[in-house]
Structures are given as C-alpha cells and as structure tokens.
Amino acid sequence: MSNSLLRHGFGLVNKEYLKTEYKGGAIIFYIQTREDKLQCSNCGSFNV
Image (cartoon, one colour):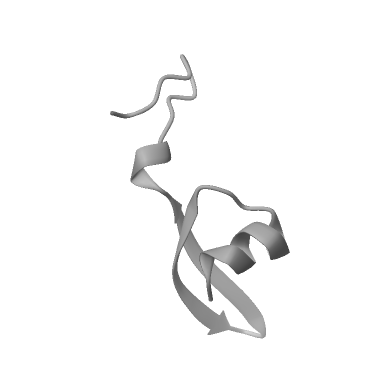
C-alpha cells in the first residue's frame, strides 16, 4: 500500500503505512503519524 492511497483513498494525510493484517474477515491497516508532523494536542506546537 502506498501513502498516496492513504491520502486519496482514505483522506489520511501526514501518515505512514506500516503493515496490513487480515483477522476474522477484517482488514487492519497499521499506520502512524509522520514524526516530523507530530503535534501537541494541547498547545498545537510541533515536535521539533
């Protein structure tokens, strides 16, 4: 899976694809926020 599919297919920006698992008929995508885009939910500052 590409980051382009995450953005255009699912509307997820600033995310990185890690892996996919198939369990009990479900598809589970593992993603994480790009480290350079981590942002404090309290004050809004970026992790620099």
